[in-house]
Image (cartoon, rainbow, N blue to C red; front, side, top):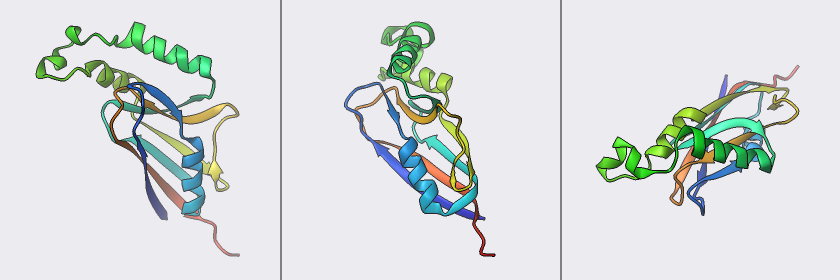
Length: 144
């Protein structure tokens, strides 16, 4: 079995952003040489997420609105975590809700995603340096 690890680094200009990272993940699958296996894509910070969904800007706005209005409004006074001097409890809850990692199958040396699926990094407390680990595991093509 082959294992390949790569880190993607982010420093967003806004506190909250959704970034399509599918092409970067695909590049790491190709570099790994894995033709059958999996790729784990995991946010290494507790105020960020990785998820699979549709690349459509209206949906991104819907996700951000849903997180703000239904999941965890950005209202520092409502969270006990913020009594520690932080103001990002909402970001922690958003990460918990959306999830911090995905596993995507690799088939024939490519991400095996559905027709509209893409891999995204969701930043819920940005404007500082953060990273995502991309770990490709599987079998390389064998010579016949």
